[in-house]
Length: 147
Image 1 (cartoon, rainbow, N blue to C red):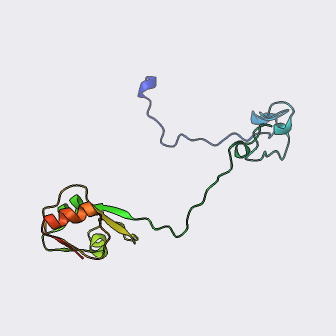
Image 2 (image 1 turned 135 degrees about the horizontal axis):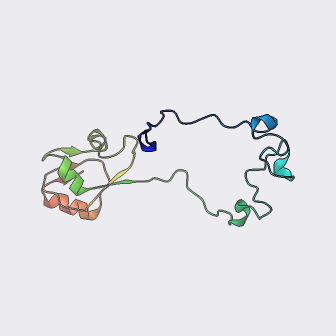
């Protein structure tokens, strides 16, 4: 038998040593692995989570946050016309609901804007969505309409 041929045990995690349970435990007796003296060797020691050994704490070193986030800010999801070209057939109507059905936008999305990146070769109708001037020009050039 060789060391390299010994099979590995499945559960190799043993129990942790019980500290401070007398000399017979192997890790007991006088200091029980706590070192000598000081706050950390005493019973009931628990330092605060923010304590840094007397240094000025991190939360006091960094500057205060200044600014304001608008609670009712409207964020628009951008959909480019090359995505419409890949996912819609000629003659189809592009609405907020149809974009959600085809999983092109998230279901919770409320605001979408059509942008003009890429090319479109299909005649699609954009209904009830804001659209950039470049995208409007390319869709109308392809024979589509914007309502």
